[in-house]
Amino acid sequence: MTRLLNWIAQIISITLFNVRSLPQRIGSSLTAVFGIAGVVAVLIGVLSIAQGILRTMENSASPENVVVLRSGATSEMMSGLSGDDTRFISEGPGLARNEDGPLSSPELFVVINLPMRSTGSDANVPLRGVSMVAPELRSGFRIVEGRMFEPGLNEVIVGVGAQREISGLEVGSTLTVAQEEWPIVGAFEAAGGLAESEIWVDAAVLQPAYRRGNSFQVVYAKLESPDAFREYKDALTSDPRLNVKPVLEVDYYEAQSAVLYNLITGLGTLIAVIMGLGAMFGALNTMYTAISSRAREIATLRALGFNAGPVVISVLIESLMLAVTGGAIGAFAAWLVFDGYRAATLNFSSFSQVAFAFDVSGSLLIRGIVFATVIGLIGGFFPAIKAARQPVATALREL
Image (cartoon, rainbow, N blue to C red; front, side):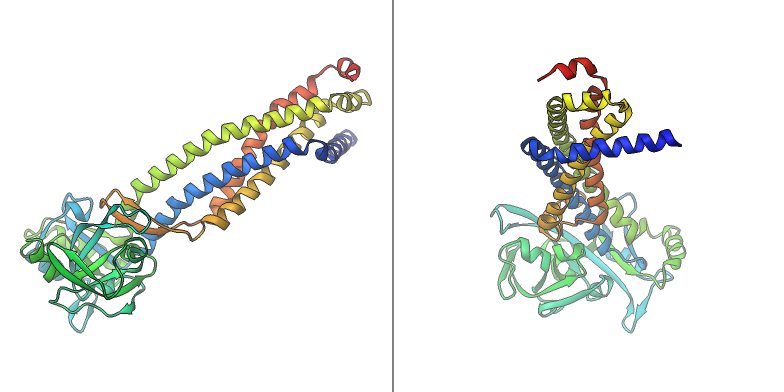
């Protein structure tokens, strides 16, 4: 027990000595700190894009909602349903109802090219043909400017996300689509979900504009409860008149976001690792410089009876202090700059723009600081070993 206490006391003594000497190495120490801070800020910033997209997809889904596609289709773009199909789908058991009938919305999905505000280049913007039931199937839907479109008229409403990113979508302006003029009569929110990236119009008006006849691509419907999904799915998949695939909306959007989320996360991690190698070499250089400048002091401590173990641990502690400080600075900077920042990117599942907000979550901040800690451990390990192994007599002779 006495040896352990003595060992801990040695660690504390050497660590305090190292900390007090930091002002003598302020330049190299700050270089290591801000190098690591930059790496952490980039890592968190990139991963917050993926987190923001995932949050947008999650906000789009309701546990009571079901999405019905043609069997074999993985997205709305690949699906196709006839008018009769949508009628049979709306008659399935377990659907919630209002005074007008089942809460079921047959919808069309097309992509149009419109200029982005930031660059002026064309972006693929989703134009969705919906029924008047559609607002009841999107969480938090509300008109925030203007009014809802009138059924049967060439009127559109735009999501606030699309309005922020795409030019020419102000309420009162006119949109030219399929060689026709479409007045923009309103703007809407949908709890930060994917619908906010879209432009909505009456499906019955969109069908002839794109020569779709009496066809749709998807049906969104609300169940009486999530427990009704099994009965509803079994009824539709066993109906010989239908060839469809019902999916819970939560599962559908999870699959839709997987490709983009994994791509951004993978690229972000790769970039951070490459930058982290640079920061790691910076930490190595800082700690080697610190060891070289304190060679005589460390040798003196060894000669006075200090063990090699406390020397190694004290150097590692110093390296970790610099790394964690850099990680905390980088995490704070990332939160300050990126959290809530709004942007748009291409959703590879629908080949259309999706508007989202960067989401710097607590888990991302922790991940960034952990990454900085790993850099500090590796950056301090080899200098710590060198400090413990250097010959005492040789070091004492150095000027």
